[in-house]
Image (cartoon, rainbow over all chains, first blue to last red; front, side, top):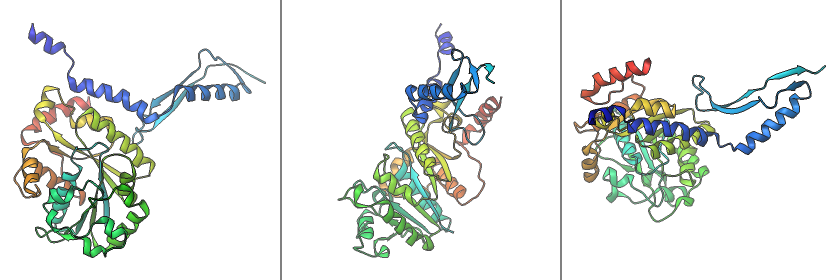
Amino acid sequence: MKKFNIFKKKKSSSIAKDRLKILLISDRINCSPQTLNLIKQDLIKSISKYMSIDEEQMEIVLKKNDKRGNNRKPSLYANIPILDILE
Amino acid sequence: MCEVIVITSGKGGVGKTTTTANLGSGLAALGKKVVMIDTDIGLRNLDVVMGLENRIVYNLVDVVEGSCRVKQALIRDKRYPGLYLLPSAQTRDKTAVNEHQMLKLIEHLRPQFDYILLDCPAGIEQGFKNAVAGADSAIIVTTPEVSAIRDADRIIGLLESHEMKKIDLLLNRMRLDLVKRGDMMSPTDVVDILGIPLIGVIPDDEHVVISTNQGEPLIETASLAGRAYRNISLRITGEKIPIELFKSVSFWTKVTDIFHKN
């Protein structure tokens, strides 16, 4: 029974690693949700001049950049579904 | 060509001063001309770790204020030809020196030495700014604990925004028994989190305590930590020495490496 628990229990080192990974992304970015929302509103405003976009499905997130040699700097990912191009 | 290296960590008590003392001695033992500068004004310790506390006449603040010549404040370590210490002031605070004065001092010392090692105080305030101002490269000292790693990450971010070209990681107080058991993050884990190259791993070794008690560098001893510091000194000079954890670990390392590759 005890042995079974040992296998099931998550090792404390991997708990530490997982906690740090999440913590450091927010530490590094230092960007509040409010700022992100302002960026989103501005993007909608400028893109709407040329295209009609799906604001409901639009996604603006900060992600850890996994490109080699630059993995410490976060990237801004924007996924903006286009409904129609305005003539 | 002189290289100016700042030894920093963010968090206190992770081994910056011990590292500075042993890398200074290690480089001097390789025949390099080295000066170690203690930039921790008000909380000086490098002198006592090196066992040179009774030989201080002038200090860093005296030098930058012009109360003495640089040469008068440098303490020559008799154990190694070419090893010098510039001690910090104990009675003043961090604001006694500014970045401009540190830059001027380093430019003055540059032509006379192969390596200038700057022992940085804990924290990210004026003392940190002074230590970092004149440095060409940085060695971040951390232990495999969440608090030390978080602070190290903050320091790396600050150094990168100051456009520090070379930042290496020194992992201190590694306990392989805990790593094996899954209760301590491995060097691979820490490198994965911090994303900077590893320059060496120092095992948690009682010889560090003993040599600090005696005011003698570890470099000459047969200890594992002494050997690890010797290897890091060689890497600083550009030698390609593979990073070893401990004698008995090589098999384990190979196994985990296989897992990490997959």
